[in-house]
Length: 347
Ligand SMILES: NC(=O)C1=CN([C@@H]2O[C@H](COP(=O)(O)OP(=O)(O)OC[C@H]3O[C@@H](n4cnc5c(N)ncnc54)[C@H](OP(=O)(O)O)[C@@H]3O)[C@@H](O)[C@H]2O)C=CC1
Ligand SMILES: CC(=O)N[C@@H](CCC(=O)OP(=O)(O)O)C(=O)O
Image (cartoon, rainbow, N blue to C red):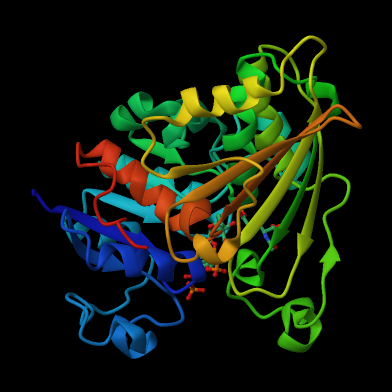
């Protein structure tokens, strides 16, 4: 397998660390750059002892300087940076001829005004939005393969979109009745000092947050609207729970009159029959985060509540895996003509 010279910008955060874990052993990757301002100059294995003896872990963190990254000969860069910062570095790297896979929210939305509404500041690079492809491989594999700027989806949106999109495409549920409840582990908030994320604040405790207008609604509603062919507005209620990593989501919506409940299972089967990373648990299947931890799988089950007429979609993923690093590597594989599973066969 050809080895692609690859950079990770923002490699010292949680998604950066997951990218390191996946890419240090990926057969199609030569890791040539990993950035961190705080850890610059230190070998990867000194900062993350878990990589001690991993091939390539003697590489030292470097500053996130676009010229220095390009000088390593990198052909592609994963950006695991805060939103706002990512757009500026993406532009600099694209200008230097690299392909970019951005894990931040900067290029997920088609409309800069929606970005400003949900992120509270003007979009830093609105001219690049038409160049970006929303990187949900189960939906856009062909456009991802040709893209030079991939916007990897958010963790919550992945867990809501994959079960719901086939149902909206086939017009099986009333989209005005969709309610999605998600629970996320604390690594979803990033590796930063924040009082509300301290162990004592989170352990043995659970709370909703971001209610009623979490920023992920912007990309969720964008993608649902494309699938439905009309504007979709939903309720989304995220919760923080005391797990290191993992997201479990329960989404419900009214079945449209005259639709047999079995159509739900058929729609999911037909959407994901060929999919490498969507595991369908069938009617009554209740996904569990422990079965997807440290993998790129999303497990999906479903049920029908005859009393309320609601379809119940259940999903579980690892927010750092299918919700971030794993999914980004899946896009990388598509962009380079590698098997979609390359470097991702972890169970
Ligand atoms: N955590 C998750 O589950 C998910 C996160 N995402 C998104 O992925 C991106 C990364 O998230 P996550 O890994 O959690 O974040 P972290 O806060 O854990 O890591 C951020 C990284 O960016 C670097 N960084 C921060 N500020 C700057 C800056 N101004 N210039 C250059 N480098 C900077 C940090 O290193 P240093 O400060 O040393 O430079 C660090 O390596 C975010 O946009 C996040 O929203 C997407 C899906 C899921
Ligand atoms: C638990 C937690 O705080 N989760 C994060 C979402 C992580 C993610 O996917 O965020 P991006 O859109 O930035 O990629 C949040 O709610 O903001």
